[in-house]
Length: 319
Image (tube, rainbow, N blue to C red; front, side):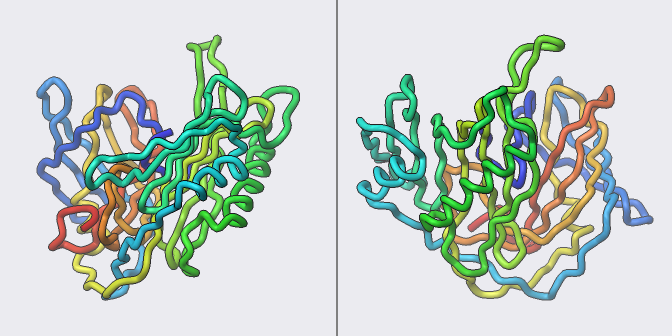
């Protein structure tokens, strides 16, 4: 699963992890932003960004969030691996010794056996597991999308019962959608390997992360990724950029296929979070979340989102 999760599991196949910003121009109608950015091969490409949605009303100030983090003891990590993720002994703990790393430690089992796999614990409070947890039942193969949601909902309840979600009362975990999480093969010989149930994590209605739960054959959960943050509200900061002004700062990824257009279908208030779990941010800035569809040359499409700070003076996505 990709580290950057919203309410769906995203895997930008073919996208290169490099972004560049070029000249941007807003037309008089205020509904289209044209972004000029270089593409692979050294040829300049023009990407049109269409705001096909309502523009949210924005307060004059919004609070930053301080990331206070969360540390699990090794004994607690072993208990969580056994009782929540159904991992079987013998288990081992691998401690991360990299200075400044967000990863704290990993509980590792024998991946070649049922109940094996791993659970990673991060200092921000995030948890990632890749293993066969064995929850649910679908003897005829893959469960339906509605069954996937039922299985994932029950597991979210188990996570919350063990108080592994962010503890602040303003934090909610909300179901979003079920998507195809992974396939194998090509063309008529391809098959779906698992579905991903996506959940948004919000602080007072503003995104601060997400959860992806992968459900495979037999209704078994084969992956869990909770990219969330243990946070407390911080001082309020003035909102200096409108949604239209923030749209001018969108970064469209360089990719192997030419992007013709980004059609924005929703703009929401959100918090800006790091794009990698390796980063421990001190604070999260308020911003705008642009969600929509990338349209590639030839007509192929891909669901995409990006968050831009609403504070002009801060260039980084987090402090």
